[in-house]
Length: 228
Image (cartoon, rainbow, N blue to C red; front, side):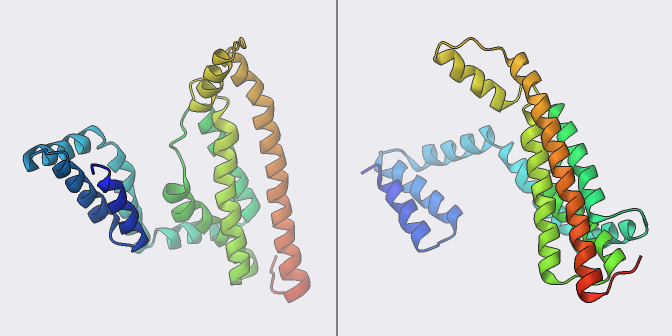
């Protein structure tokens, strides 16, 4: 019967009730069926919240970013980039790729991210550079630029973090090799990740350069909207 909490969670998610209410009800039901007092159940809720309160730090950043966007963060990012004549979508994304990969290689994996950087700053700057050069963007072009912005963050983090010796991926591989009797050294793994990271940086920079060329062809050959 103590597994009734699992059933409550399944039913709650199927009928799409508020997840917080579902999990709370499942916890209360499980505790009461396990003959715990209401005081003990609430105490365990409080202990779990206190132990895992650092998880709420990420959630707290989301409303802050939402407030900044409401008061014109995206518009300011677009207008600032539009004043830089040499800025293009590909160049801006390449600069972010270098920063993101270098920071991840130094262990600073928290610098960046889709919610913290890509949506409020990187994507608007990339779109602003394209709008300054070609005028108003159609929706499919805007979506393409946003997809490239998200990809830059993923690629920079994925290939950059393996260069840092104390990152989880390196330690996971070290543990796997040790369990299977294969001698390994985290330092050597990190060193061998450097050529891969450099290759990823070069290859994706070329892709971003091709993005600039594709935008140029799209607006100058098909619509004739571009302005040098």
